[in-house]
Length: 176
Image (cartoon, rainbow, N blue to C red; front, side):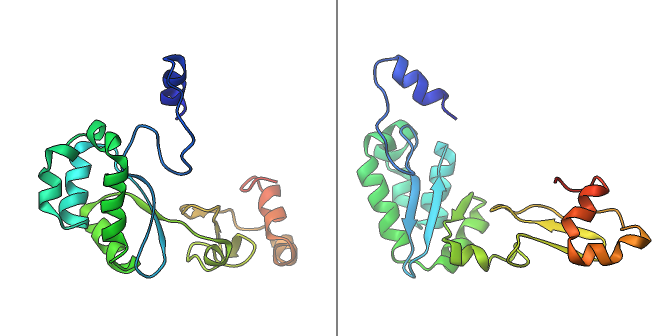
């Protein structure tokens, strides 16, 4: 992911720091919804921009506007590009945007603080992992699929209740 900034540096035009924005992709960054949620998007192709403009922003004219047709055009007009996205996001709830992104098949992410992370549905309880029967689920900020663990040996049942990670580690299923 550092190839483009490195090439820009070597070409005599080092990128400036932009927080979560990207020096050569627009729109790319965090935008606030009407109900205060922070949503991260990264529109990386001209086709994806047209889909975003038409289906998420619901602005067909913007999708066809030659001033925003290519990523190069949008980067040149980053302030206007981001302002238009921010305007629409600011009028739309998180739930409505989530549904639009899902229908449009555009990747996005909710930016969580620790309180929201603690209530994330893929984090079963406050330790980050849970043992349920014969499955281990572990969340580390991103959704991970369940994997089947070995059933504990008969003598390990009490140890599993006390320290499930150690039992699974001893069986070669989990990392120490």
